[in-house]
Length: 306
Image (cartoon, rainbow, N blue to C red; front, side, top):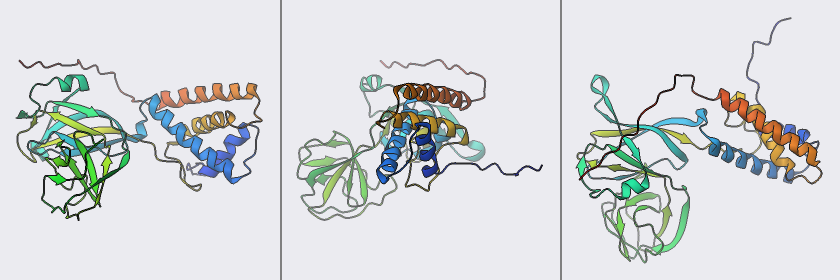
């Protein structure tokens, strides 16, 4: 007998949920069953992110560094940065130089954060990525080049960070009670523009990096990194999930276990079996989803400046 010569088996969201219900000894019957399953599936992917690195969510990115600028936003769905370098030059003249990641407690003790040079250290500030609506508004119109922005109040604003006015994202470096100071206009691929008096401000809690020393020239250094992004959401029913095929069994087992904790007629003994199966399937998938390379140990370097 001939083989199919295909290897594209997958489960759309609806079929995946049906399989999980059947493992619980239940049937998918109502729209609420589907909705609560989709919610559990999204929570399951959050759990996977907390368990460690998911290789299929590793992506490369880069940020062009500007003279004197310390803070730079990361994509809002960034969980963490894995590896990073400072790049200079292009083509045959390209050089990638190690940049050391430091903790918040180390960064805060750097005496002069505005010193300039080639960045050799970076603090990754892992913010939530949420958007916070505020009651603050512009007290007067601003142009596309203004670097001081008058607002009705900065109460509850972070001392430095990012705000959105209309469609523009603006980075600010400090505040007074009624102003945002040291503003960098049109960041995060938005365009600087004029805004009318009374326009509302939203605070954007972007994950970001803080480099030290601050770059001593613009567009000379590029911060190149590999990041761990969030697993994409479950979707509306016809989507396939943002996972490789080797995690399908684990996802079904995990969803079945999550559902067993919510469905009223699932026997406690079956629930324990579903949990054990989920842990086994996750371990199998996680052991496969790893780097197939020799272990490399890198000593942690610390720099002290008197």
